[in-house]
Length: 244
Image (cartoon, rainbow, N blue to C red; front, top):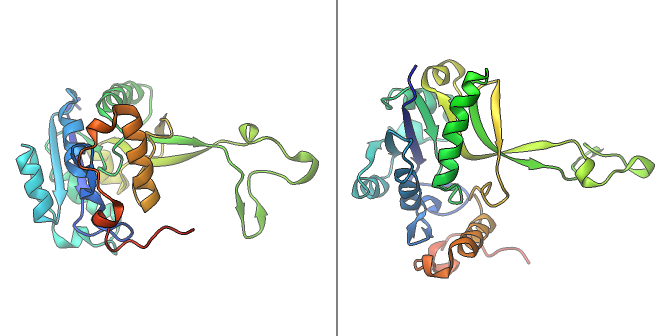
């Protein structure tokens, strides 16, 4: 097995929670184009593919000189098993390893991809089977029956002493193509969890995620790098106002 990597950006025409989220304005372009450019700047990726059922998004990919592959309608249907879509993807990529790179993680930047790819191959040699980005989570959790990871009363501990959970951020997933076919999933049972920062962990799925991503990016890169920023009412006409 070689070390060549195919990066896939999966984008659908429709999104159930946030209207047209994959092409919301971001930086000096939009989320999809922003992600393409981040990946193109990474010297460790051998091909970049945009997989979409949207002609508009496929045209954006072509203008950025990356591969644009029209996704069959059945693989853009959320009622279908995710594993079927992943198995389909393995037949579309040319190289041995798949980097699954969602454009809704805009704070996963080029240097983080480079770090993750190097770490991935190191960890394969150590016996791990894949790599994902995670955010360490130590907060008080309850379900309908009460506390899950802490105790009330004298056994209460501060949050930093709680058992650690890990939020799978969806920002970076790297696995061998042949293993994905077997697992019907994009990472395996012995995955290496690469911890990332709070801003790198942002996965835009809601109004508030989008606000947070914009704020973090502007704080890091400056407002001059956000010329396309528009009032949220204009870019999300079907999104209800946030609760007060």
